[in-house]
Amino acid sequence: MKEDTMRARPTTLPGRPSRIRRAAIALAVSALAALTLAGCSSEEKDERAYPGSPAGQSLETVLKRFELQLPSCDVEGLGFSGSSRYPEEKLSLSFRAPKPCVDKFLREHGAVDVEKPFHWPTQGADSPQDSYFLEEDSKRFGWEFDHSRQYDVHRGFHTSNGSLFKVLVDPRGTTETVYMQSTFVGGS
Image (tube, rainbow, N blue to C red):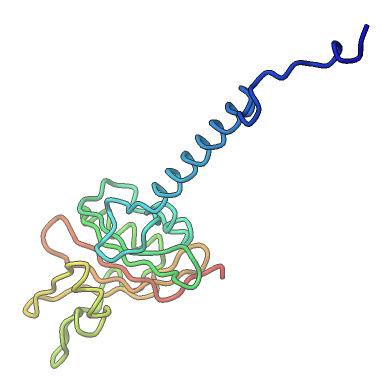
């Protein structure tokens, strides 16, 4: 046999990619598209996030970083702003829940004065919006405080990793509104 007849014949015309190469390119393009979409979706906002909150942060991820668990009862009107990324780590949270559930939640986290909380505002003081929470955060989150009402302030609220929070409770009726803001991230 001649040497020329033993050579393999090309499967494609010169300058055109083979079927295998075309399939590999199509697979690579599909994988790149999937990664791009996954990257975009991870930057979507959690629907419970307040306006101006960092993108790509879910409530569950942020709560995990602070080792904070929500009350065991059903909560309503939950909103948050926070990040689990250093150095942005911060958490602001609000929700409504039945009074017994809020009391239990505060006790479980070592909040001082659960029985006889300090009331805000005191004589001659501004509203909590003006001095207890950062004013720009309160406005951005829609946290509105009535200067004529008193709010219960709880100190010493902490989580298992040592994260600390200031807590303000609006004790209206049988359902209370809880406003929380981290002051220290534990476990750092």
